[in-house]
Length: 509
Image (tube, rainbow, N blue to C red):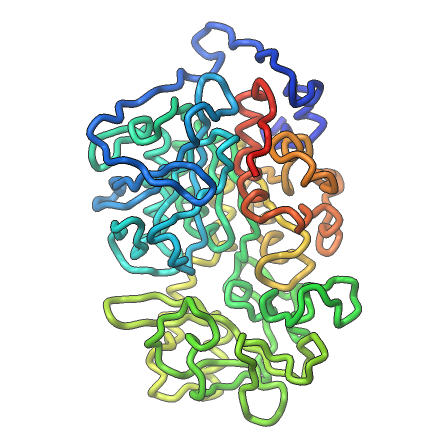
């Protein structure tokens, strides 16, 4: 039976005692038998002498910034986070999760106050990849921001190998930096949104030799394809009111979906979008629409001119609900949010392959729009960032690993109830030989986070697996904080791999 089959709730309950004991049961799990093959490797406690004092992350965990060597030479940077003393799910020490954060938006708060994902009470160690060009506590990762491409994949690979016991650039193991006993015989991997691209690339390229050490891989709402990553499908954040079901389809969050976009046209290579209304304007800058763009990015952007007046109509938030009815109609403009990369003092923005090809074919781009990457550069750039092109190879590299696709009632990106981005990755993992699951067992969520998961149904059945809009019934409720959902998705396979902890943690939120 594939390991992923154990991810189903029924199988999990046959192997984990927590399914039959309550959160206050203090009886320890049975110890592993002594043999050459049974039981985990010993957990290790490091030597912290000579290290600078740690800082405190946003959830109350501690962290240090650590330089790590890249496999092909050079250096990357990771954050190591760990819980306050005395917090751990397992008496022998803390499990380890390697995090791939979103790859194309630099959160400025990270400079002085980085995020951690796991709650302190969960007692986990995180190794978080810091992407090229990002700065944390005065340390800038070598390289330039490049939207989750090969350099980010190399950085994630370095984080993964360091988490499994490889030395830092200072010659020290993970246990030296995390001031708790570290249990990294078996670890978990996790990505958030566009962070799925470097994770999948790293696993596809060099993951096969590490597969026996990886308990599971959780991918949170990957946009997967260029057309979804740049929001040609319409996006959640374009909806004027996320609580108002203005179009009457019972989904209050998708009123800004692109009605000209057909999710059924999408394949692992991309989607066949309707470009009949594509237009260009140099009256606005992308930075005026989204604060993550560089402030000095030149004016000029592509958008869908659907109002017919030849003017790009947006409000101060970049929304295009011109008639104020709470939704974006087919006669109201839409714009795509291209990703961008930096090289020295110059910037390039990258629309999807289909959009840039259509713009050039129709002669929409003036010669002055040098900040918009040409078709050749665009195709080369997306070749490594299109998750649909890497998921099958990643699945083939770790076919027996517990892969899971985690999604919530209200997606954070594309306004598509069909979950096209997640489904593309799911199907490609299957094509590569993996056996992915949707979301995580309900008992894991209840143990780690309690009543906030009271309305969570658990994962859907494997046979037949739900598809398209059917998945909505099995979503994690959006009343749960996304960071909590993301962290539980990463920790769930560790509970299956290490055995259930002595007791469920008390809430620290």
